[in-house]
Image (cartoon, rainbow, N blue to C red; front, side, top):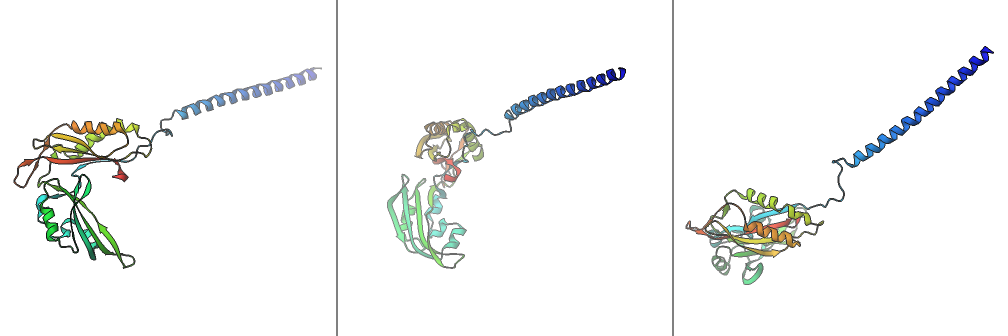
Length: 271
């Protein structure tokens, strides 16, 4: 009898342990499930995770300079060959010259004020055109020539067409330096960039004049547009209100004169 009671008690104890263990296992499983849920929520809030809806702003170019490649007036007037306007790399490419056209540029268009030559040496007519230019005149020298292909050794037809702006012997400069000027334009236009959608941003050119007194005047929408009127307007406002002073341009006599500059803005691969 006693053996039967003892056997029953042992079986009951074992059953109780099994039930407790099973219940505890369920409880632990539920806790792990809760922790997993919390971990997922934290992951969604992780600041390191990129927002795929964030709009991408293209790499932007900001530039302030003469309208085209700057050449001093005295150098333009004393030029005798096209090589006076080419760099060493360009000079080395020319094997044989077919033709050279000196053409005045007006209102961003090639004018009919032009003269043609057939060698590197400028003709009398070409030199007369160049000597008639004044500060902030613009011209191009289109040279059609034969160049040797480095891989095949054969001559190929090519051309150069640099656009040039006649500038004073001493150009106008921003007192704080060009880097500070570009930084002013970048920082103060940053909020305006938020309207850009994808890659539809265009380039814009705004001209302005630095007076002989060292102040900004005559800001104009010169050419093209970003495609966003608010950005175009913002840059006009920023140029009109550039802080600080400018050191005016000077001619060959040391006299202070006005100088036109051009601000260019747009996608870096499009400027």
